[in-house]
Amino acid sequence: MQYANLGRTNLRLSVLGLGTVQLGMAYGWDQLPPPSDHRVISLIRRALELGINYIDTAAMYGRSESLVGRACAGLTCRPVIATKLSIRNPDGAGLLTGQALRQSVEQSLSQSLQMLGVDVLDLVQLHSLDTRFATPELLDLLAQYRQRGWVRYWGVTTYGEEAPLDALDHPKLIRALQIPYSALDRRMERKVIPRAQEQGTGIVLRSIFLQGVLSHRLDSLPAALADLSPLAAPLLRLAQDTGMDLAELALRFAAFASGAHSAIFGTTNISELEANIRAVEAGPLPPDLVAAVRAIEVADSALLNPGNWRLSTP
Image 1 (tube, helix red, strand yellow):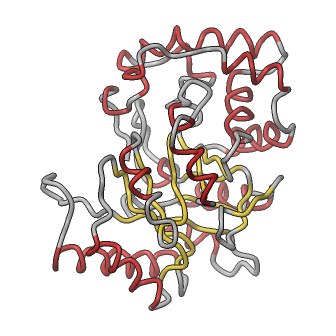
Image 2 (image 1 turned 120 degrees about the vertical axis):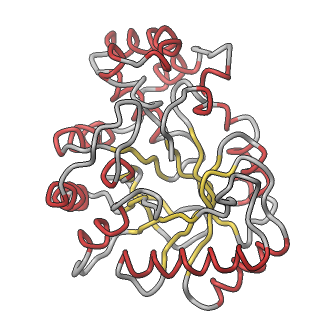
């Protein structure tokens, strides 16, 4: 397993990180229930045994935070754990402000500290932002919790370009971005990733399999994702021509993307976990194969927007 510092932080992450949304709640287009607590804890511990040291969770992911905390309890060498909190107004009307914001942030952080069984949170990400958000009020509040020792680093998880570019205006406080990226969805390469590289902001990639489109599930996609199937067909042919499956090609392309420090994936079974780790241990794709992947373009970028899929995407 390879490791890299998350930008200008002192957090050293495995190139592959474990996402845990489907370990804590029903998720994705098939909405399968999560595994038993015992299976989840076994899977997390197996990931750690195999060299993964970065776990992504959130209070909004059902039992995820609690199970991550239980799986990591008593470990002499704890993984880096990233969690999230929402600053969205529960009624959907914009972002929280004033006393409601302060109360929500404090409650969320207190709960995450308790669920994860830690004294300080490695990385806390403001969850699922797609517009400008960095008000003086919010930035001052985030700085206070760093000064109080509750949070080592702040980050954001985003959609589109507006929110991450806003975050990049505040590199001393917001140290990491989690952005969607895959062999088909390379939109963040235009502005976000280059600017993050310039100023040393950490980059974590998610949706590297594009909701299963870039995997063995390609042949069984729901109607909401049907338009993506023909887009993945050229990638499938490339994978087959080089003796690998589509998921391996997608994973190795994303995990070693320029500017990225870690790529997270989710799974509910240990065999898939082990296959993904074997794939990333094979290293980056050959340059000619990377070039062939990059030659495949998605003309209608709206097809890559989860908001158009009518799926559950926390």
